[in-house]
Image 1 (cartoon, one colour):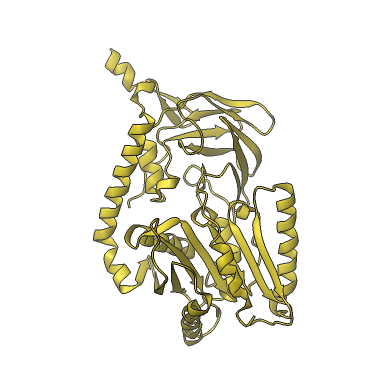
Image 2: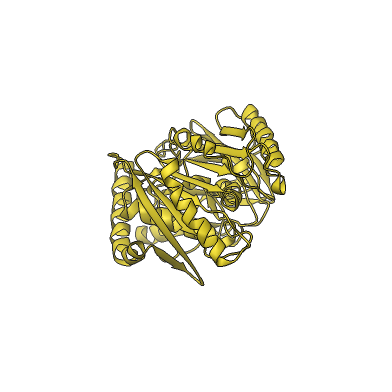
Length: 400
């Protein structure tokens, strides 16, 4: 009878919670389990990804991304920094974009990142939006994953940069991929409809020539400077920026923009910040730092802002979403102590202890393959029901 009771689960709004908390892991057991996950993953990558790294060619679906890279300086004890540098061009013949790619790689000798791998990918397409189509996020995610596991890159020292159309991509990609980055630098680009809200926890540089009036790049850069200044004023622990409108310069800034590189390298990624501002773009993601959505629920325009103080998680703002996940690990708070989740209206959604679960760790690791973004517990927030409960499994983890 006792064994049967242990197997019973409580089902509430599509999720389940073990009835016996003793099935969970201690903090020490959880860390050992995480190391096993990481070691198994590295072994898998050595078998499956070594060839694409040697060929410097990644294929995902119908698209292929080539890349070239160069080391600058010496590898630090905690691993290389990685700069991913996006070329210009766009809606032009392939030969033009090829030339822009080669030029972006040569710029590495001018930018000279310290103790870093400078990597220039070739956009998989020649479309006008070559760096912010939906497949780009997958390619950059894979580039980072491969270099962390196989080239000893420090996952907390990854930076994104780009010039012209590459700068367009940085405007779009950095806010929606911020949890992968320590910082990003936009050179001579245009944001289109992108929002700066997701940049809260990374360093972000904007460099544009004073006379770069094409697509209103200069005036839009000033608008973004005002937006970021306002965000910083309202939240002085976030939105670190370096913004320079270069006097008497046009689209080409005569390398004055290279000051962004040493500035960026003063920052490291914080994978579990105390406050997260998540704004869904037109290319949607199902997870962002320690927030996530159940499979199939991500939509353009959704917004969640949440923060942590001590053992209290506060849901500060939500829009266009009534069910989402708060994921937890021991870097964020003490999972051996009770946790409280407070809703926007001040009501208590959850109060109590959570259980560290292998299943949750495996699932959250499998969707990102990042040790620092692996979580051993998660709470499903149901705003309609005004409550939250710990999950065990919402959907199967995708294959690695």
